[in-house]
Length: 76
Image (tube, rainbow, N blue to C red):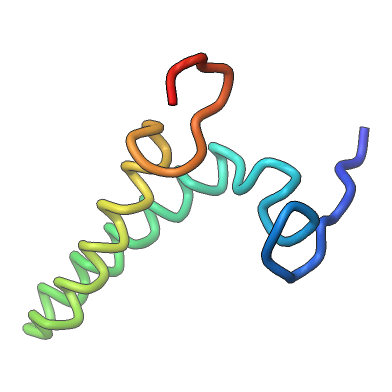
């Protein structure tokens, strides 16, 4: 079943209203950012590697459900 696109705005009918990014997307984004961070580190671009590492950590935290919208839980 196709998911309805929520649009670009903020609020209840805006982006993210249909549930946010999938776990597949989050996993691929995490792996991609980690790979980019490694390449940048190898090339000696430490600042850029740090930014890519931070992105990989963020996507990993979203993937694991540590940040972002909690699903199927009664706790706040």
